[in-house]
Image 1 (tube, rainbow, N blue to C red):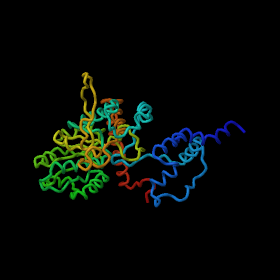
Image 2 (cartoon, helix red, strand yellow):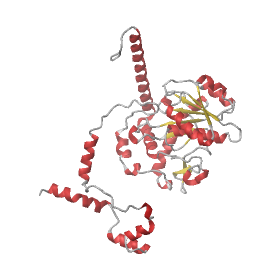
Image 3 (tube, rainbow, N blue to C red):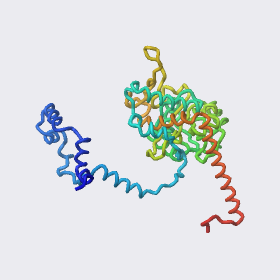
Image 4 (tube, helix red, strand yellow):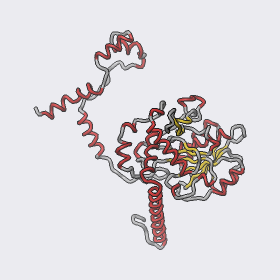
Amino acid sequence: MGASEVDLKTEPAQFVARHIGPREREIADMLAQVGYESLEALVNAVVPADIRRSAPLVLPAARSEYEVLDDMRGIAKRNRLQHSMIGMGYYGCHTPSVTLRTVLENPAWYTAYTPYQAEISQGRLEALFNFQTLVAELTALPIANASLLDEATAAAEAMAMCYRSAAGEGRQTFVVSRHCHPQTIAVVKTRAAPLGIGVAVVGDDELSGVENAFGVLLQYPATTGDLIDYRDVIAHLRSSDVPVAVATDLLALTLIEPPGRLGAQIAVGSSQRFGMPIGCGGPHAAFMAAADEFKRTMPGRIVGASSDSEGRQAYRLALQTREQHIRRERATSNICTAQVLPAIVAGLYAVYHGREGLEGIAAAVHARACALAAGDRRHRRGAGEGHQPPGAR
């Protein structure tokens, strides 16, 4: 019998011993502490009989780690890799190798979630502070939080924030532009229903007549890619005391006028295209930036820079009293209010490329979009002259 065969036969037992505890002595100590003679007696005492299985699980024979990984590789080879054409806020992007190696593949970063004692993790707070600074500068708004779940839920949070600011004024309608992403409109409607909020989806020609709304959501650039100058619309709404939120794109903001300079009070969106692969499941680090008047009602958490007792710079969670783990039913948000790892990746992506690099990437994306549009126009002109595209009947 060869050495490799012996290893394969003994490896499952080694894996169990190495990774699954507790050991027999530890079990005996635990049972002595709680006053039971066996694990079975303990389970019988604490688990109701009507939810316990009466028969053992039927499981296949144990396999080695090598065998399982080899089987998974075989399954993975059956996948067909295709180019994503989803768009609407989800874009393929390149993750710099240095970020991939030192952050996404590093358990010191990828195991981070909600930092309940965040101040002991100064590196993580500094990285989130960097993310906030990036968002604040690109949106031209003074305050940004340390990320939200995704763009659609961030838009719903913006609606709730506007609603809280308009409390007692009798306004019950939130207006959403038709140019918003469809998933954003759907999530806003879903969030509005239990709150008794009406959602009106309107075209640009109707935006000037919504003075009785408690808030308006615009998309800039639009879900179709159109770049609409909302300066006059926002000025009109602001003159009627209607808060304006803008769903936007960080990469586009490296080239176009930011929402804050257009007069918007809130900006939301996704930072996914800043180096975060689409394959993490859908939710990506959303961002939210707002005017100073919203700082006490903004959901999520805000990292601030301070000084310790010796005068050295230190980072802390400046505001997180709006989180459900702190205020429970009085929280301003009851959904997942942070995507720490994707936010850190986005912030480090910006650091890696710098301002000129980001502007160059945005310009390249725009140039390719223009080339695609020009090709489409040529194709349409050709089809109009009687030339049918391949496969047309």
